[in-house]
Image (cartoon, rainbow, N blue to C red; front, side, top):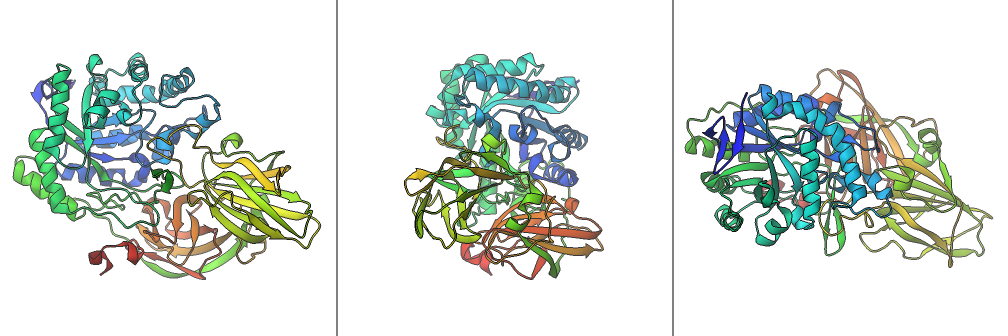
Length: 600
């Protein structure tokens, strides 16, 4: 049986061991492609794969656990082990990772007094119930049990959030009591305040650092902190940021391949590292996170390409080749292999088959729920997606003033089927006056509210700020309107859409396209001529798109396609669509959000 120890150095079976690791999130990659990505990590000459485990992916609904398909963490670990890769696993309740709510399940928000990421007994009781299930599955994959897991994370960048040592100790003990024997580590920014707040050196838990440059300086800061704790630990960068994530409206972020390789070289001369990311993958469905800057929310895009060594599709990039060359020069004894490369298909001008307005088919998609006052998503046990509100209101004047009080994140307001306005909380528009002129005795008021992704990092990562939908109410004149019907549009699949209904211009609508494939390969759906919405491929939600860019396409892995008949359904909210759609071999970008070289 193999052994792994943390002393002055990492020791594998008693011998010094340099960890060369790359992050691959199994939950961001179709299972059919796990082998491809893991093989390419091994081909680079690396020996370890690292992954987070997102709580909300495995327990989206309270007490209901999923470990199948993209959630099959144990199969992912087995593929890695069969390829000769060790694993670093990060099963902390919070993961950040530019992932919806940082991996925390939305149902926690129904607890009125809960304090997440703290020693709050309510929060810890839910973590314990989750760990009862999760850690039982991970236990057999420990190195001590014949598996390939080298280390387990306690919490993630906690020093950038809190300093509740009782909480950190509680997580540590929860894992110990459920048969996880470690070794354990924490990962934080490499500066003193973060290290001091987020670590447990008294418990002999390894401290690792997260940074993307200045390896010597950051390692020196960590080493100085170790000495103050009377520790002689090996140095490790648990997250070397070799690229970065992207947000709507903003330019694609790129990092020079040679500069990246040189920074990595500096780090591995001094210690061990984990590339964050090695293969970024895709935020399928509604699982993108949200950044905060100057108090405003900036949701992240569907692609999690990250400018990583493997692109979103999983193919090697110039950055991969630069790192591979550097590793060969530095460690010529390390075996490297030719990486795997997938091809893609193109199919242009797929004709529109059917279209129908949301209002015409909404009752076939979901059964409405009544409440006197508007409810939030969480109160309706809905985690993500859209929430449609409807009420009938008798006007008291020819022109009336409505206001939406505290709604998140983006709202379309309709009166008798006509779009009156769109308001965004991020732009400060929610709460502005909405003028409606009526010619009927009873106005039908509809609101479509989109949850664009919960915050995954920072001070706004709280239970009070992350509830979605209408949190207070809708006013007409100076009073709140009552008698609401709620339609939770989770859109996990496209089931229930009835295309026999009518289509009305400028209403949110579904557009169906059907096509045949003689061979199945990856592809990219070109949505550059659509407004905003989500896409379903053979009833699976592959993510959001938005005309503001920077991406104007969605990646479709071959595992979602069929040889023969296939179906695309686009849910579009802005009233912008095209009579044909195309599949491309490469992603499509908004040109004004690319650098000059990429524009060419």
